[in-house]
Amino acid sequence: MSNHLIAQIATMALLATPVLAQEVVIPTVTSKYKVSIGGYVKLDYINNSTNLGSATGIAALGSLQPGGIPKSSSVAGSQHQSIFTARQSRLWLKVNGPDFLDAKTSAYIEGDFFGSGSSNESPDFRMRHAYGTLDWKNTQVLFGQFWDNFGSGPSSTYDFGHGATTGNPGSPRVAQIKVTQKVSLTDQNSLKLIAALQNPVQDNFNQAAGGSSGDMVNVVGKAMLESKALGVAPGFWGLPMCPLTLGLFGQYGNQKIDGKQYDSYGYGVLAFVPLLKSSNGKSREMTVSFEGQAYMAANMATSHATAAALVGPAGNKSPAKGYGLFSQIIFYPTQNLGITAGYGKRNAYDYASYSNNIDFQKSSSQIFANIAYDLNAAVRVAAEYQHLTTQYGNITAGTSDSGINNVLRLSAIYFF
Image (cartoon, rainbow, N blue to C red; front, side):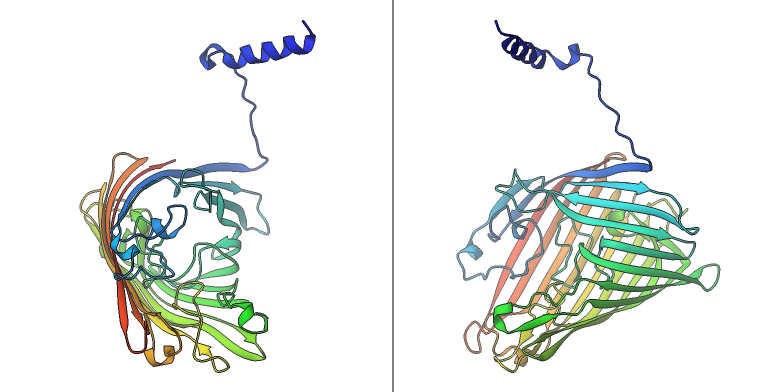
């Protein structure tokens, strides 16, 4: 028997040996900096009253419907859909590095399994956030990929849409460089000022529609008054404890097509109000919070602030305009039980300007309510209902139609 064959047999025997009977030596992985790991495993059952398409795509799994809910008169509008998926599971790494000029430095990278894939069970891993920070006492510099700076944040739903097409525009994945400056006013009040440059939202232009000469990087600004006068109350998913916050935000960019400049911009107001504050700043029991925002935007289809980029006839197009409204209430009767309800709507502005846009979205809205319970520090279960509606115009001259989807979602989450 050859030595090669003997080696193969020995290897196969070793692999067949029960793991518990082996002394397995696992190499230690180290870093020169402090590294922490986390994330969550998330299983969802989703039942849609309308067929939103393949479960391998984003559309079927959340309220984010850039193309709108299928019309009730369509074949998809008369079908329902039932899905199990674990694709929203997530993994992150955080690194605390050496100080630099008296600033603490850190890096964070996060991914999920929501990328495209051959099946619902074989999705691709995709990057969500990847950024580094330098933190001084009142100043932070962030560079990398992070949440969009336009608006106050997502609706507290248990899908990956988070109301982006219904009053909460933005993206969780925008390359940017951002400076945040805190200005203390009193012991309880401060200003948070944000200035950022980020990837342009007007980059959705079809090159074939005209000779594009490129995009201008977007400029974003936010100014928020934060006050501890009303205490703090739970925010998104009940995880952060947030103070009273009142703010303004705005964004601008442009692009030239065939020598003509098309502006892209948006502005709005936001508010977070602890209606019933935490008893000690940490407990969620008997807390109530309100969050809301309103905005106006033009040519911001990529971040879903508007349903279209341009409107009007060929040779005389202009930025598509729209506005959005959003509000939600988060109530925790006990530390572990959370109840959230909200409403959001994105609406086209000046329907007449859309006369050359066949089948355009007049509005996209959602009503939602969810209840979540923490079984322990790691495991959360949640149930959610969403009523999603899209109103369409110009199906044919002067006619309209609508699409409606009722969503039942059951979620189980293990945080680690």
